[in-house]
Length: 407
Image 1: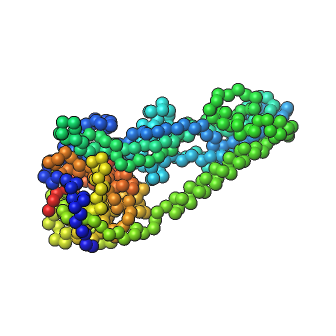
Image 2: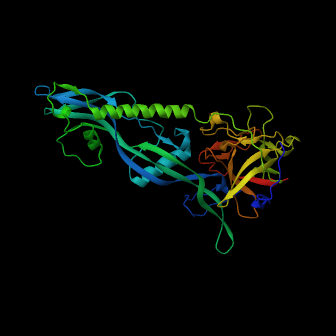
Image 3: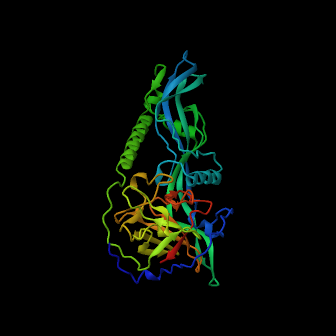
């Protein structure tokens, strides 16, 4: 594929002088705090917003008459199913997701779920000792916690005196999270005084207190609740809609794109070592660490294309000279921790777009982040043939820091 040089983006100013990797930092990431070159390939979350909503997951209206008091087990119906999730992955398996949910709990002072789990999606029973006759709402519920997060990435920042330093900055990616607190169950009546904005109050609201259903005499047993039935129906519709969205999420092939590439050609090296990124020779293979003299087919040569820069962070497509493809994370495994990087036909696709975080001028060290997933690129071990993979928080030992070396 031909690539036209662009004067507009040629001023990005990527330094290409070699530098040795610095040791990984042990300091906690804070906005504006210092970081090291080893942190260029890492990422940490910070919480932008949080909302706590008492939520009923299961409910049943139950009428207790004289003579039917005592301990009973009542089957409740599903009202809402809450699943723990962070970002687009739909699950929690990487260190970034765990760290995000841990920070949510710490910031709110709540004990929230930090593993991939969900409230029950089937009817469950509540056992309760009914001491008095009356109209009860049997419930299970929790506090649903939702909000948004951003990421902190290490990048060069020009200071007031004109010098440069590495700082933790707000990254270009953001996302949402959902989790919940410990489940509770109980029974509540219309006449009970309960705290506002509590789980019990939410259950009391489902009783339709003051309605004909609540005030009429009934035989012992279940009582239909219009609010509960409506809430359950809406929850079922929402769950079906969510499944439909997930089933149809962007699996269409990318549209072939005309690239505007910078003229410079680079190797993406491991700092101070001979292995670098090389595009796959075979279909369904991935980008691997290989020696520079492994091939003469330019599979280890890359150009930056369709380059933009925002707040000092480059966004670009990585075009491979050897096979004419663009670096990408395969769509069918894009939500997975340690999904491998490969090349594909260049297209208008955020899976083929990468943020590049840079060391101070005079150093060519970089960190690479996929725009769509937000994950950082790295490798498990330094070895010939090792795949380049994505890691939600990057490689904390510094193995996600690379060198952009001009050839």
